[in-house]
Image (cartoon, rainbow over all chains, first blue to last red; front, top):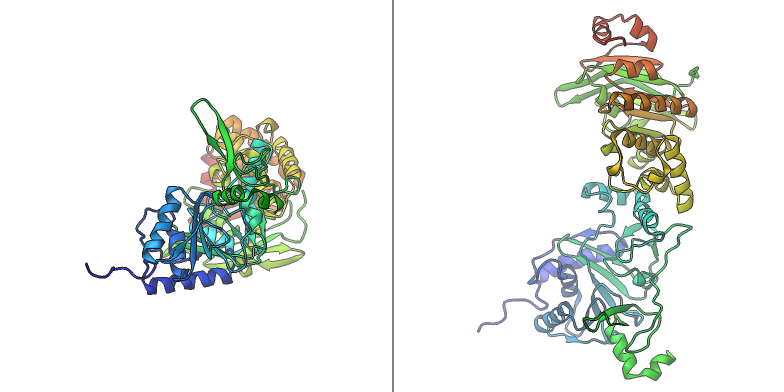
Length: 284
Length: 259
C-alpha cells in the first residue's frame, strides 16, 4: 500500500486557501454570501458538503471537533462526518460542547452557550433568503446590493394571514449587523436569539449553491417581524422527560405504535450532562 | 380637469433602437398632473416600447425623459438604481396587460396590495391589512377574498387587483399597457368605468397604451397616434378622433365601427 492519496483534512492546500479567502471575506462583510469554488466531496449534496469544506479548511491537528445533526451527536450524518474527520485529519472528536473547538451542525445551536474562541459551522441547503420571492440570482443579488428587503415581509404577512401568527419555525430570516438579510440555514427559530451577540464565530457553508457566509463574534442579529406581531421563539409547555430541563428545544419521540410519545432534549449532549450531574445542572 | 402649467413628465426626442432596428423615434410630449394621454396605433407601431422607455424599464438610445419631484424637473437618466426602484414603486404605477406579470400569483390578494407598503417600510400588520381591505373594496373586490391568491381570481378581478396593488401608495402617474386587453366586453366596460372613476377621484395622471379607440375616447384627454415607431399625429382626443388629419389616422378611425 502506498501512502494515502489525500492531504490532511482531505482537501488539498490550494483548495483550503481558496476557501479560507472566501471565509475571510465573509467575516469582513457579515451576512454577505461569498461565492466560492465548491468541490466535489465524498458524500452527496444535502449531506453537508458545504459545512465539511469549511471545517476541512479551518481545522488543525490539535483541534477538537464536535458534529451534531438536529442537536444530536449520534445520528447517521453526525457520526459519519465525525468519523470522516477522525480518519482524514486524525483529530480528536468529542460530543461535549464545552470541549469542542469546532462544532459542525445541521442545524441546531447547542443549548450550552458557546464561548469565545469556538467556531460553529452550519450546513446550508439554500443560502438565499429571497429565493422564494425571486427565482433570478441576478435580481436577488441586486436586491441585496440595494438593501431592497421590503418584499421579504410578504412571507411573514402570508403566515399571519393564514395562521394568525408568524408560522415560520425554521430558516427564519434575520438582518445581520443592520445590513444583509440572511437565511440562518434551517435552524429552528428557537436558536435565532443565540446568534445575536454570540461570542463564537459562526460560519455557513452551502456546497451545492457554492456560497459561504458568516456572522463574526459579537455581531447584531435581528429576526424580522411586524410591530404588532413581534418575533417569538417556540415555547414548550413541558420539560424534558429524561433530564427535566425547561426552556430548551424538545424533540417529540414516538415510543410505540399506540400513540405513546415523550418529549426529550434535542441537544443530546446537554441532556446527558444534566443526567450525569442532576444537582449541578439544577443549580446552573 | 384643467392641466396646470407645470408638466409632470416631459419626454424629449425619445428614441430606441433594438440593434439596427428602429422601435421608437424622436417622441416628444409633456403630461401634466391629472391628465390622461392615450397612445394608439396598430400592433408593432412602438406603443409598448414607448411606455417601457417612459417608465424607465428600458434604456433610451437617445433623447431624455424628465420627471417632476419635489418641484424640480429631473432627467431620469441620472437616477441611481435604488432611486429608480423607489420611484417605480411609490410615485408611479404600472398596469400590465397580463396581470400575471404585475401580480404575485401564489400569494394572497392582501399581500399583493400590501407589497408596496411593506417595501416602503410599513411594519404594522394590522395597518397593512386595513389598507389592503380598503383598496380591495375600492376596486370592487369582495373583502372576504383578501386571503385568496389571484390564481383563483377571474381575469377581470386580477386586473382590478393589479390596479389596487399599484394605487395603494397613491402614485401620481400610472402607466397602463392595454389594461382591458384580453377581457370580455362587459368586463371591459366595468373596468373602464372603474379606471375613469379612480383617475378622476385621485387626480392621477395616466399614460394608456391601447389599440382600442373606444378606450382612448372614454379615458383620455389627449391622444398620440403612432405608426412605425413615430408619433404621426397628436392632439385632443375628440379632435383627433372626430377630425383626423393624417391619412393613417383617418384609416384607423374609419376602420372602427362607431368609435
